[in-house]
Image 1: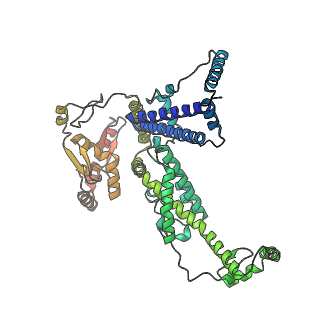
Image 2: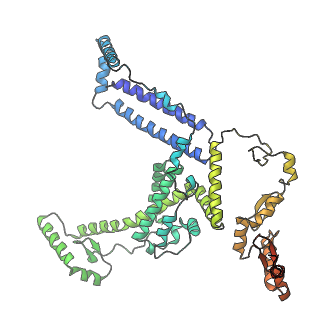
Length: 485
């Protein structure tokens, strides 16, 4: 068994090496999202170990049993040399008994600080497919639980992501036990997601600050959605049943309760306790018991209000992930099933390429687009394709496209299609080159007002043959009659 002083020395060494390992981790430059997560989780593990070792050192330095003081007295007393040679003899005997025992120096554990595939493989099971490695939230189960609450308004998943923190809009009478269960599920998920995505966040400190702020607002009655209920004095003690510890609002309900079996049994037990002198039946005792019952009745509401405040605090910290989730859901709703599959495959390829890319940052002062080799394209090619020319599209939310090719291509992409759908206009070729909202609405109004003539219908309808060639209706029927298609 090691001496107490040697144990303290070993703990101090481990703390010093852990602190240096934390510095080495922060000196690394993560190249992608996965490496950043690995860095933060690694540092979080080091900090937990530093905390644990510091607690062990505190116990040893406190020396409640006096063993450290006795050891110090032994090695510094009159027989210090005899104690030294005695310990040296024990060390030699141990190594003579186990001559081939392998010893691994502590510094070997912290030599390899670079990220590797084996280290990053731990994140595969940490996040679901919908969370995409911690980029987005997966609130589908919580949303289903929200939809099962009868008194709340129904909304789709995209609307829920924008409104799930607006608790003040929910009426107080609709917040029941099922609502409390929903809040607990939502709070539990957000806290778990926060630990996985931002492990260095001090969650106990966040809770402590939020609790302090909540207690002040609750006492003042300024918690959003939970105003202080105004009472005209204390409720009457005549409608309070001290035997069952319940407060009633109406005489009829109270009188009906007095004839119930449950009350008769509780009253008999109260009478026996009063006879023994353990319970008092005076007015002060009844009023005190009534105040306790009323305070206990408010605890569920206070707990619900506290959970709402905590959820809002977590949502503030995860604001970037929530915004990215809304954008991702909105974008995926405009894609077909095949396009979603291709997107998942392309994202996986990009992740693999970014994980295997160990090159340094490329010098790019002009911020030119990168080519197929990951290097900036030549400046003459940048000017040739007109990538310096910016095209603004109001329908896409004033999104800026660089280059004519990207501008022409965007009319068939999800962002422009979503903007046209919001305007209630079909995204057809008649609206190509239309980027203003007013221009698009005016053209759509003109197209709706001018119905196609009967002679022009054949030119409007398009048909496609087996080889993918597109013809108008008249040409297609002529070729089909001739047997050419």
